[in-house]
Length: 135
Ligand code: HEC
Image (cartoon, rainbow, N blue to C red; front, side, top):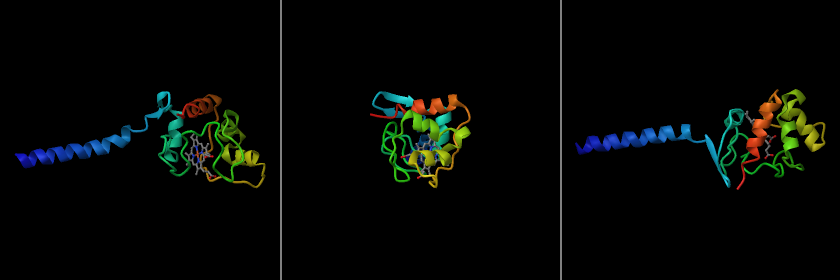
């Protein structure tokens, strides 16, 4: 009896461990409370962490990014709403073209392999969300 209880508790602990990561990341804890991750921003999650202190994944952590200096390709610009709009604008060539404008170097390249969005409303949704990720 005692053994089966322990086995059951163990199985429960394991299923909690498996379920937790799937639920994690629906919201991000910020200084103004939990912020829900909108649909379009979920596309960033394959490569970026939004949670504070979660660190680099494929690309840098995006918590506290808004209006902060860039950490990539030598930096030299800040992630204002305007620059984020350029970065995520598929019609304007996405990050591959944006990096040339931001660095002022026509030969600049970026490792970000996501081309952004066609629709301004989608870009707005993501930029608005990123602007909330601060203490
Ligand atoms: C396929 C992977 C991938 C996806 C998806 C992706 N990124 Fe990136 N991102 C990267 C990589 C890699 C870098 C680093 C680029 C470099 O060093 O040139 C990066 C860099 C960035 C930077 C610059 C960060 C800094 O510290 O200067 C921003 C801003 C950014 N990504 C935003 C986004 C947003 C917003 C999304 C979702 C809409 C997104 N990314 C989706 C891979 C990705």
